[in-house]
Length: 322
Ligand SMILES: Nc1nc2c(ncn2[C@@H]2O[C@H](COP(=O)(O)OP(=O)(O)OP(=O)(O)O)[C@@H](O)[C@H]2O)c(=O)[nH]1
Ligand SMILES: [Mg+2]
Image 1: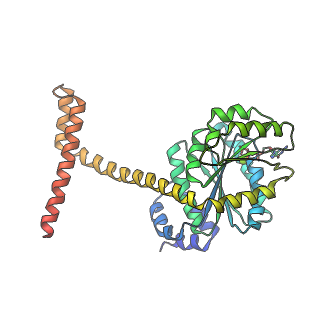
Image 2: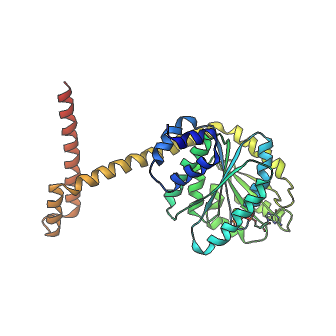
Image 3: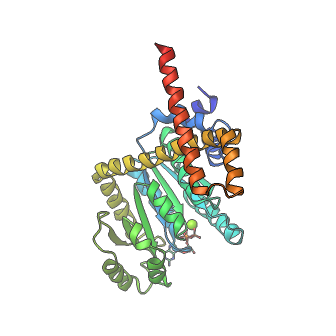
């Protein structure tokens, strides 16, 4: 067993931190780590908090963590940082604020990861980071990301429940519809309920969010005053326990996509290396260039060739075995 894997399973924070970096940067051993911990995963539940910048996600998470801990969850937080250089500084400051907010009286594990621009990339690394925390014994993993469209959709695919925050003091309602945020949520939270306009936003949002199979709910809280936070944590706990079968079904769909992706990746690499030193492929390029054949036909022929050769090889192997 890799030494780092021993550390992860023991819940050693330094091993965890290191492992997450390895996964996030796809360093050497990243696959090996996931392989070795894989059988220890499958117990964690996951929440994704999203919503416009400044909606109070970090503040609310900070207040919810002790409540979740009282309910028996060991909690970890992953903050997904958009890598935009413009907002980078401000957001980093915010993470630190959240951290010092929470850490005082809890043993929450908290980590920021970069979203690195590549949208497909974040869901892949998030999935594996969740697996690491899961193997380390964290039972509730919270992902915070800023509501900016595509990233949220990616995050919502990875987590069990997606929670979308709005506040009464901004043009969030319009933003929400534009960004498609009214479609991805399982729970809609009007935060800053201590401010004017919370109630009317609550009513509007309830109308805006139709009945879908996500059975979305709308709640009002104030992360600042703490009003409604305890009840909200209990509600989340209830929903999580209630929807296990739906989560299993969604996990199956997710695994289907993950496996397809991985298979395509492996095959693509193999085929590319095959093509690089393939004579008929090089001939075909020439024929296309000299207009003897059109590119569609060329591509079809080469593909057919590859599969034919592959089948021939397999048959030979079988004959050899006999
Ligand atoms: N009045 C009021 N202010 C709040 C409430 N919750 C958070 N805030 C304030 O809103 C500001 C932004 O809060 P954050 O928790 O940093 O918001 P965020 O959604 O995490 O922001 P980003 O991570 O930058 O997207 C802070 O100044 C908070 O103190 C609330 O319930 N009521
Ligand atoms: Mg934040």
